[in-house]
Length: 415
Image (cartoon, rainbow, N blue to C red; front, side):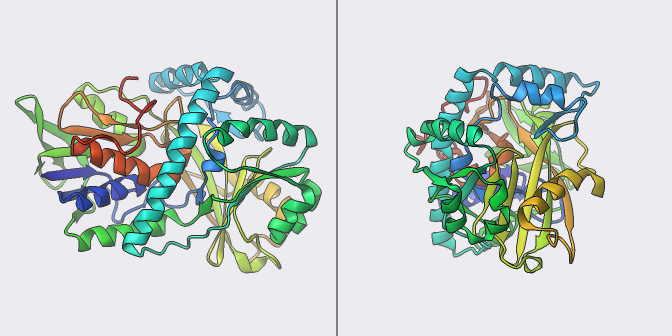
């Protein structure tokens, strides 16, 4: 079967790989000049089942409200004259109950663990290198009260089979001596030894090369503009380089998936949530962190990647612009320097902002669409790197009309 995959981010390329493994002929269409040039370009880098909590929680509405007059909130809401934004925001608020947050977190934790196992399988099969780092991840808290509450909350993840250890301040520093400069800010932490990290952009580009070696036809600088239907099925996609016909199509276009899907009468509950990252040389620090983690009370993630450190923060519900200026990163860098010292970024800082394709539940849509030969694999939000390889395998199962290797509960179209 000839399958066209729309999008060459980490989700699209991972999907193409699984389809190729199953023996399909695969074409990848990508509007950028390279793979992983948009949302997958400079994300947090954490492969983090231990951080699978749903963003839609009882705390989120308060953060959104405070963000209207304070610039230090982890979730920021910037109102727009956009029906799409308001529909999404109302649906998101509907997920911010304790009951819904727990249910979404449990599904998400199982998906993340499965997806991490698939990432390990793919790297074992291909030998792809991506500055990967095992050894777990640390999630630390600045106040004893927040640490105590988080330790109890982690039972949700433990019930899904994840090992989560409680660590004292001294045990956090012992686990990663690179946090010695942050000792003053650590009341305690949670450690998930099976979590890992790596550069999603390098992984995606190297896997794209592997896909090409398996026969994939990868067409960059090719924007999908529409569809041609015939006898109730999709016959081809229209692109800036001409039509491309196939037997089946997989939609992996992130934040732009809803715009294309609506041409077919398909309503996808996805809206961009903007995130900011900086990448700095590890050599600026006397003792850089050895493993990644999160300063939970600031939702500041840090991740060593080879000779670099990636820092990410903020979830901004503000539309489709990924523009940024150095002042947008001021609070993030202040918080990071409180942890790692004033030399962080002294020899250079690479700034970036990306748009996460977020659903109200925080779970992706992985399903067959109402059109029998169109499949959906999109909406992975802030954990696309963690979820990509599992969702890719599930999508390949859908295309092959096989029993799913992992349940798509909570990820079905329209439900």
